Length: 271
Image 1 (spheres, one colour):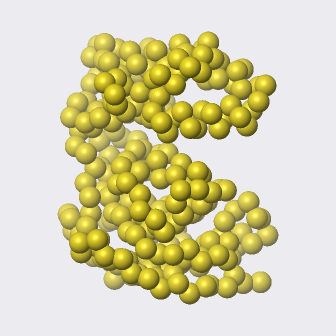
Image 2 (cartoon, one colour):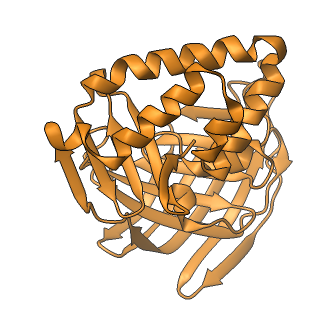
């Protein structure tokens, strides 16, 4: 049984940015209204690609910084909260044979690779053009996976990621304000002190924690304490802290990481 591709053809221009095409998720038409493009270098050494071009197609406007970050991008949370739907593509602009696709919707996120067709691709330092196509019915018998179909064309400005403003190693790491903030956060988690944790959290992190607590119920305290204990253990082994303005990535042992944001005069957990 094939999924009907509902036809929704729209275009949106913000300055010179343009997108037009069709998108369905689980057989439901999603308006193709907005396009965002961002190029992320791999200064942190944590990305899958040497440079990562992120192309976001959405039904609603979102802030550009929803594309900032390493793996768990803010736009994913916006989708889980029901505040946006669309498609996120992540790939090396020099290698079109491997493309990470994330379907953005409230109930779930799906990621696949290698099956997005890209044609008429043009990429420069400040501009990207091309057509993108994906038609996959393979998950129909698994309702937890949102199968998607799309074909769209874009012509968009490529936004740069904020530049690295500090790259700390050795003793500079352990004495950094980011590690001090992370230690405070770990201490609050070890005690399952939600009020204290929220003082050192972004709005995004607060929303995610409250959802986590509600989902776990009576088991929430144990889970939070365990997370704090593990975080406290790895902090002495931190390798680097890479700062991009008001964003920081703390690189933990085995290349795991923790992301922070500077807001209201202090460093806080981002998610």
